[in-house]
Length: 179
Length: 145
Image 1 (spheres, one colour):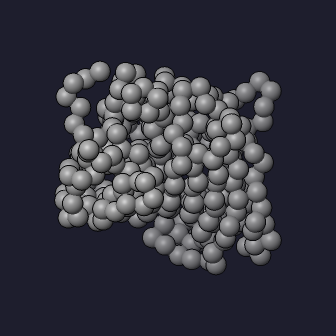
Image 2: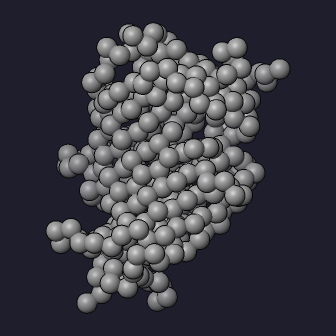
Image 3: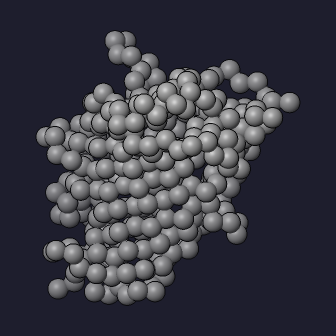
């Protein structure tokens, strides 16, 4: 018997054929609520026990990079929506989570990231995500569904391209739910 | 500034060199810290019942934790003067609360492109004997003059 859970990740539902018409669709440009800040960098590095001086040691970072830099693994963290905001709707930059398709859940499968510039304290990230492809129905060990390929471009406040992320996500129903 | 920072230079690295292994236990605490640190409240990362609904056995680390861990393996080995230029990874299976991560890595290629000194490495992130996440990175590492 499945455990009860009282939170559902909001998904849009629709047919594969309809979803195909959305290929090439771009998300609205999301501007991060938070600027790149040392406090969040420290929490992230602490989570990974990452002692890289570029993120912790002001003197070293200044000499090597011109200042403390954000870990590249935090790229997606900066434009994450807040769980609640008094005036803004919660909008996720990640277009793959908004595409109407069958499948009650999703999981990320692979990432390919290229980095052009570092992010420094005080920088504000913005991002635009594009839907590139949707696979035909496929079955994996988790279930049956579709793979969505997206490409997100991340910019700093000077509109300089900081990084590009090509992502694959699986939108699916478990084998149990399919039976 | 610490005086004992360990740095590898491009001209000291050769193909076939091992990338120093890293071990990281992943108790529940780290999975929850991951959700908070990355602002990622997708329920599979903090709600065990939702994770099981997904066909997962437990709550699991998100992509940003795995990416950061792979980066850490690279920069622990090559030093903080490393610029990660590219990282590719495939999450073949999830990393669950209760797992312990360990890595194997090797230098695949050393080369120059324009004025950059580059090193390609591959890293396998493993739980027990299974490779959960194969990854490959291109690192820009200074030349020691």
